Length: 251
Image (tube, rainbow, N blue to C red):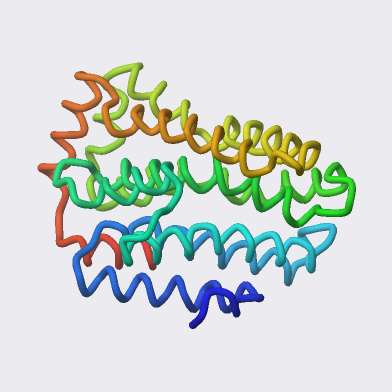
């Protein structure tokens, strides 16, 4: 499917399914984020049906714009084309043996929420007061905020020692808190407001934000000796193939 032709959340889910199948066949860790993102996208779709949002049509448009930022970055990376620094760092992590599943997911969330969400919010509000979006923006973030706990709970069922190891050090808790969706929500909204207030310098603001988010990724890649040691223990204890883990996240 041509990404430019994507206009509905169902089409987004279809492309995510294609990426999941592709990455499973290749045993590619990039499928972890795709699988989890599809799960969240399905939850957003359920929100449309249950009248969860104030303006479902606007939120579907936002969701599509938001998702296409990730989809376009993914396919550009596959084609060796230039993408944002934030996504480039996230995708390159897939070639490293040591990162655990949680790290792959967190670094994807770093690029997508801290950079892409604000851009999508500003774009869907073009020509309108962005403050009209705030309530629904918070609602979609309530769905996104379930990612951290959901990931920990899901993975702990496959690797029971995960939660125990994460609690060995208070610094490990801080590591996860740094990437909590509450912080991402606040930052993404402020970024969206800055884009809406200064559309003339849109590209410059995006580039500066991208650089800051890319630098923040180092917290995931190199979280320090203690946490890296804990993650190394988890990595050696991870069961199944990459495809098996993608399957688990996709179910």
